[in-house]
Image 1 (cartoon, one colour):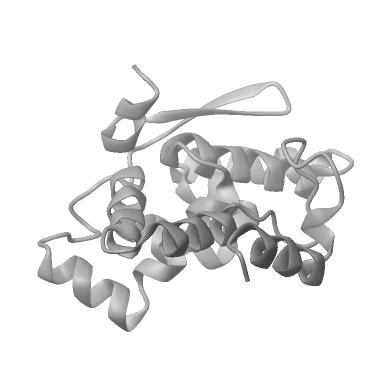
Image 2 (cartoon, rainbow, N blue to C red):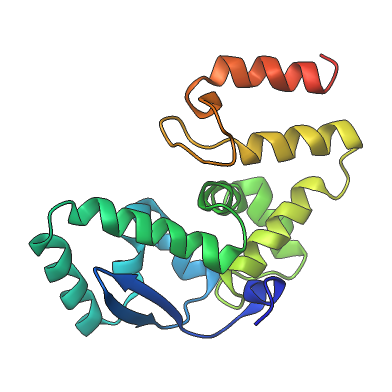
Length: 176
C-alpha cells in the first residue's frame, strides 16, 4: 500500500512487541479519539481481548515494558496517520474541540465512519484551507514541534525542550 493510501486504510495493522507480532483490527477514528487519553497504551487498548492479555503479560514480564509499549503505541499512531505521532495527537485533539467538530460535522465527516488518518487529514484541511501563507506556516510550525522532553532526530537539537526558544524562532520566521 502506498504511503498516502494508509490514510484511508480499513485493514488490520501489525505491531511487534518484544518480538511477538500482533494484528490489531481496524478501528474507526472515533475509537482512536476516545482512547487517545491512553496514548502510551494505545496498541494494547486497540488489540483484541486475547491479544491484549498477551501484550499485558509481555509488558509486565519485561524490564522497561511500559516504555516499549509507549514507543510501539506512538509508532502505531504515526503509521496509521502518516505523520509524526505528536502531530496526529494534536490534530485528533483539535478535531473534537467544539469549533473543529462542528465544522467537520457540517462537512459530513463522522468519526465513526472514517479511518483515523482520513480524520486527521480532514482536520488539517479544516484548519489550513482558508489560511494565508503566514497563518499556514504558523499552524504547520506549531503542529510540528515535538512535545517537551521528547527527542526527535529530525529536529537535531533541543528545541523540543524550550518552548520560549521555539516561539522566538517562529516569530523570526514569520517576520514578527
